[in-house]
Length: 412
Image (cartoon, rainbow, N blue to C red; front, side, top):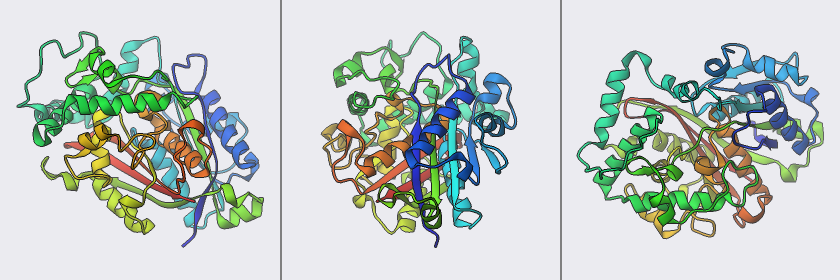
């Protein structure tokens, strides 16, 4: 089997970047990745460009990658545009890996960029409305919100300000976990506080303000049990990774000691299942495939980045990744097992909640963080001795779970 390595990574600042364009963010992320690997853009043999919102936000429905990359001088090579909702970035990465494994070349690029902020707030929030079956909106809403029924919601726990309907869905998932396993709002707040505290040490994070658990609980409500710091913000930003086969590393004279091996890159779409079949969750299935492909187990992982669109998402995903038993994610988080210095640090970058969530770039932001961790280059948020890392990136909604899950295992 052809081994694939990350030779260079790059990531822009995350946040409200009204003065930056898709082209500018692409040039920033790709330029940083090329510089990191000591690679010239002329060496790229294929590019996979991840973006989910530019069509909605700007009307650029087609050839987004060709336009953004050609503007920075990346020409003639095949460019594939990738959209897979919030899993778009990890999907672009997966395709860049497959290009090398297929022997089509020895250097490939995965890049994800998103411009989500707008002065038109209605346009900005409506971008999420297409991340499920638009032909069955009423049925989607009824099925997903039903998961949260049967749990008493305290008065005053819903925001009077507009927010995405998906926050209601995340809240329903949260209440389902609470009534099924006894998870508490305080445990969910512990995840949020942990991620915001981690983000202090990430200069590229959108938010870098630490929070205590009590401060998270006292923050403005979104919809119970979620408060504002528990939810990922709207973000602009970009991230990129340059991948090489062993032949590519040798041909370009790249320092092998900084190259990070891609031990598994798995995509899994969801299935019809009962809500009580937690072990059949799309992420759990994908994770089992990834561990098998890499020849490792959950207990071998040293650090993880997971898709915490809300803090509850992290609780569910650490269960799916096998870091704890189903139903024990809240207690595991509250004990500090997932904090820096804990048994399995999760989201040392600050996660989506504070690092930011530029949809098409999110999966590649995770790759950026884990590459830095495995190289020992993460500074004050470094997980000491990290040798194996795992990323989980999910997207869209179908049935009662994400439409797609992507699992990446990296090692040095």
